[in-house]
Structures are given as C-alpha cells and as structure tokens.
Amino acid sequence: MTAVTVRVPAKVNLQLAVGPAREDGYHDLVNVFHAVSLFDEVTVTAAGPRAVTGFARLTVEGEPYAYTAEVPLDDTNLAARAARLLARETGSGGPIDIHLRKRIPVAGGMAGGSADAAGALVACNTFWRAGLSPDDLLALAAELGSDVAFPLVGRTAVGTGRGELLTPVSSVGRYHWVFALSGKGLSTGRVFAEYDRLRPDAPEPREDTALMSALASGDARALGAALSNDLEAAALSLRPDLDATLQAGRAAGALGVIVSGSGPTCAFLAADEAAAGRVAAALRESGHCERTVTAYGDVEGAVVVPQG
Ligand code: C5P
Image (cartoon, rainbow, N blue to C red; front, side, top):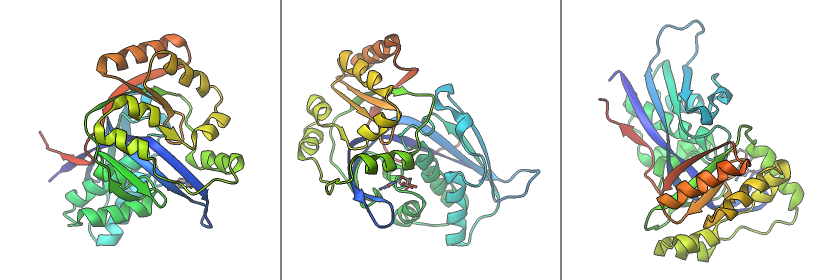
C-alpha cells in the first residue's frame, strides 16, 4: 500500500442545546449532528524527503471558498495530532505525509478540522494496518475534540456530554441545504465564551421532541421549523452582519434558517434541490453573502476511497 485516501463529510447541527459552563470549561450539549455531502479527502503516504524532520508533514489544496490559507500546516493541525495519537496508542507507524483536499470551509462551524482528524485516524489505521476497531477509533476521536467522533459515523446522530457521546437518530428522506459562507472564520472557543456572557443562567440542555419526530417522518417543513441553535445569539453578537444573511435566506423562502454550529456559516433548509438552487441565487443577489454552496444530507461517515 503506497497511499490511503479517506473521504469525510461536513456536518450541520439540527439542534445545538448548550448547558451552563462545566468545571472543566466545556459545556454539556444536546447536539444533533447531520452529515452533509460536502466532503474533504485525507490522503496518507509514507514520508517523502523533507527539509525539517517531523512526524507528519501536511499539504493542503481546496476549493477557493474553503479558505485553505487558514489551515495550520504545522503539528498543531488536528489531522497531524490524530496521526501522532494513533501511532502512540498502537505503537505502529512512522513519519508520514498527509494531504488534505478541502471542500469543507475552514473555521466555518461545519467541523472541517474535526472531519480531517477523523479522516486521518481512519487513513492511518488502514495505512499502518494498526487494527483498531470502530469503537477504538471513536475513543481516540473523543480525545482529540468534541466534534471528531461524529464524522466517523456520519448520517444523523445526537451527541451528548461535550458532544462526543453519540447515539444514532433514525432519519428518513434526503434534505437539501444551502450554506452561505463567510471569508472570516469564528473561533469556537470565543463563541462559547460569548454564550457564557449572554446566558449565565443557561438551563440543562434537552432533546427537542418536535425535531426528532420531523426526522422520523422525513418532513422537511417540520424539520425547518424545529431547527435551533443556542449558539446563534452568541455568533450574531460577534458577527452582527450574519443577521442580514439569515434574513435574506428567510425572504428567499427557505424552510429553516440557522447559524451552523459556532458559525459563521449560515445554513438554509430548502424543500428540494430546485428550491435550494433558488435560495442560493437569491442569497448571492442579496449582497449579504459572499459565497454559497449546496449539499444534501444525511450522508455516510468516513470511508476509504478505493485506489483507482
Ligand atoms: O472540543 P473542541 O476542541 O473541539 O472544542 C473547542 C472549544 O469549544 C473548547 O476549547 C471550548 O471552549 C468549546 N467547547 C465547549 N463545550 C463543548 C465543546 C466545545 O465549551 N461541549
């Protein structure tokens, strides 16, 4: 085996209920993850010649809208940390090159960095024949970050705890989404800190039963009405310009309108693929959105791409 490529999906949060800050600084969540058809690809190869010694050398390419210039290429990158963690835990592997092909916007609230880390875990496990089970990989993912486990499983799942304890949700049908992308990312930590400032009395997070029945029946209109994100007010407080983007999507007839995760990406649920195209065009014409991308959900989690 000379290379292993793994494809990993982005996520949008259908519900993000955030509790009060815990002792460890994290927040208990009810986080309904939904995997959408915007995929990054993570390719692992044996290390080529390099000027500086190091365990994982990173390179990146991607769509212009993914703002790949913002991706850290040093060993702070979550994909590099994932490779090191897996090597340390299994005693396998040696220096590697990791190439990221990005379609998930960077620092956009769609868990692109977490998806790349999940992809690196699966790629290294395969490349080094390390033999970790899916449950072993989920445990390593949870060590790396709150959102890293979900892209391993994909589809639709509720995350509790920090968001890393996953339970699959039965979801029928296909949902069509438009994402309004923003050139300037938002730091997840900053958005949570702003949430603490705005909501010092946050209640314990609870699963929304209306959302669960919408997913069980495949009712896009009911799903649109049930979307909710407790971090939205905090994201809007830091980025007031996003309000006009949300309004423009609402005016364009989206069934549901929400900031994705900690933002700044805004997500719009449309009735079908044609309606998604119309919402995307209206958003771009509104002048309140730099770029749009359309995708559908839910989709499967990390998969090894056959070498062709
Ligand atoms: O777990 P992860 O490293 O992705 O989290 C990034 C930041 O988001 C954390 O440092 C923390 O500030 C915040 N966070 C949180 N509660 C969670 C998940 C993330 O406060 N459940």
